[in-house]
Image (cartoon, rainbow over all chains, first blue to last red; front, side, top):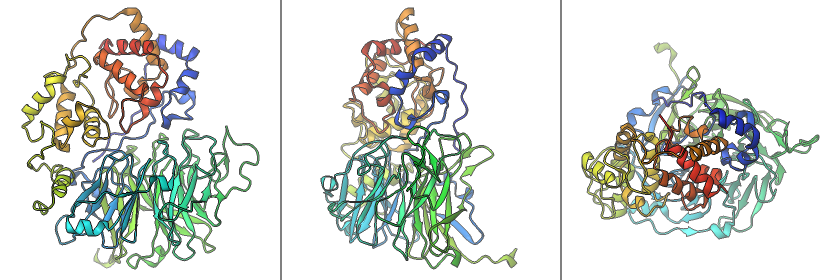
Length: 420
Length: 206
């Protein structure tokens, strides 16, 4: 399936409108920009660049672009589960249930672990929430973070296994006391090796001054919402992180600012070496790009630079370290990173999974394509949007495709070149 | 259906999440919308009772669906169905409607020709509305001909009273839904300006 990408549109403005708009509209228009257009310069005002709408309907299995996927030799992909519009962030229960957050469609899915040759079933655990993107699992409980609320579902897998009604969750919204801004307010969730729940709070804007203790941060909490700590500051909008399997350091992706240019500032892969480190937003972007409005000389002093650059507007989101036995040795402790793909540039990038290999000193990383094919650069079109990755117990890698509501499973077998 | 003997929640959820999307016909639950399970022709009659048999509404306050982009109708129906957009009339009408049926209805209304608006334009008001719409950059999403695209609705030829109500609803934040773009755009716009823009959009000449 190929989706029609936004075509450059010739917006014919009437003569009357043009005269007026040049004379008197800038102040008015600035007050009336939607959130995603904040920071758009007046010469881009009629640009057709805007976020791509995510389908809210089921993609028929024959329309899922499995045959577009390309990986290095030896890797192959299959459809592991499908029929879940908007499927985004993944968390796996102890008994094998895969939980999936969403944004626009407001649901949390559970894919049941019934690999008995039949198609995997899924159920909708909850619907009607505001962008319940974040899911995490610990000690039998599923944690769900929507923009304005946080819930805990205890013993969720036994209820699913018994076919019981899902009991009302414990609401932890007040305990966590997080802001509920719509802009960049959707949450990623993950438990750290310290047993604490890590929660990012994005900047409530494209670019703006923020309170460094409440926004553009990654917080951590005890699972009950107590003992809040600011782990990282100056993080514009992180929607994915994981902990180094040996050092326990937090590594996270961060989305660069829009409307500053076709090519950047680039998204980041970051490493937190010390609690409270500052990663630059809103003054210093990417690899040391001073913000044209809010930054000044020295704005990048004392700022932690990225471990790797992830591409301009590429939307690097879910990421996990690989520790499985299935993939070749070179993938041990490497990071798989899903890039949902760009909207704020005319020449698209992303729509893939990259792999980041860490330097010997463990401070930097180099990125390289791992799963590609959903972006057609000749047509500047895309057919899928990877949002998250998850390692399975057998070492296979799941990839969530939000555009098609599908989960792919990537597995590896040593290629036998003599066969060909 | 493996869960057909399961608890009611499982039947209901699987209806939406799995079987319904694949086009299975399942018995409608009691709180489903009246159109659920009806043949397509009868579903069109249910919708047409308010929206007009050809998708051109003659009922004050009720929008025309004729000529709307398919995705506009699909997304709004799913927002209603999922209770993400609350509306006394439409939330219950969308309850339990499967994706495939919503998509078929949207395709049908997209194809219907847009009827001429009721009444004649007030030239002065229309010109003022056109200026305001240009200032607000409505065309950057709804297109220069205001036919809309993808999830962004057609405005050209829409009922004037509906356009006024929709814009006021966004401004006053009484019209919900997951996409807050229009709430940001309509912030602080006066009743007078809304009336002028609605008048212009209703009377855009093809």
